[in-house]
Image 1: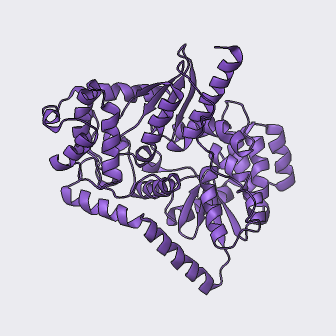
Image 2: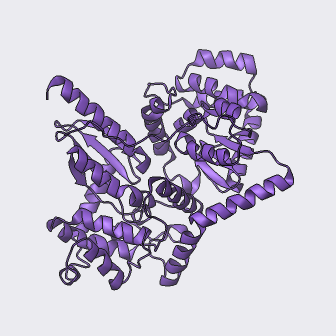
Image 3: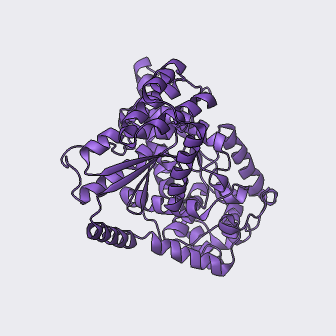
Length: 461
């Protein structure tokens, strides 16, 4: 199975040389350490003060992106509360290897945005229909025609009409604000997309401030905290505009009629910081828990870029610090280390230690800096999982894992998911209640479990 995916080379290589593996691992560990982040922030603030610049926050809006529609609803509140110069830019979606399946990503964003909107007090149309191409084009034309000063106030209004595919409302807005020509729209989109690329990002719904990126409503609390530290918050004693949702299963005594399928991989930074928390949540709630490991994305043919990799590693580092999870002492396990560990998985699982093996590997690769490409490193992983190394050595290289992981991959893809970690929650009749991607959606999984348990309590089940 693993052989069906070709070596892509570059940032997406699945088998780096020993030297490259070591050097890049050390670089990632250093660049994203808490001390280096602090030094960069201090340097940026000194430069800003020296130049006499305001706190400039750049926001990059992709009109057909569900996450952008959520984010833009907070712009006016952000501008009113914080001492910032908020600059909005219209952009195209991710391009090239940053978005190997742009259409699939847009569908997921639509579905996900509708699920999380209520948690943030935001509005997202419940229709399952995506904006039509004609309406997207018209929305872009109206926004291009608008003045920069009114753009952040206009984005939510245009977005509401667009996501309802309300052609009458869009026509009314076009009459009020005008419509730019196709060439003017193209020029504005190119300018915004180019600036985003120069600042080293690729996605919509992104905020940028002094060298750091913040994704949509999910990461806005980090930007708010940073501005607060710089005394740029006019209401420092008030709750944040977009606080991070908490993972809570309070009151859930048992949810054994639910099945939670968990799709992790062994080279996913995000998986590494949520794996143990997911296992603990499953134990606490009593759901039937099924761990379904898959190959890392670049090992199953999904391209990647260095730009994307750097953002993900750094974003995971701050998420880990917030959660109090060990992370950052990294030794890249891509390729052979992943294969070797997975070759042990069927045996470990038969010993009742499959989940412990995966947890141990992730902890050693992402938090302890263990070279899992060596027998010495893999032995540390195995023994920390409570398994016997002498016995384990007999199973290294066993191909039994390949069909299992391919089955898991196909099952995950069938839910419209391709990244990890992903979750699928089903009831006792096999009806899917939730299928979602991302470590930052564990709170949503917990919320659905709570909701289901409450319904059972009312009905007496």
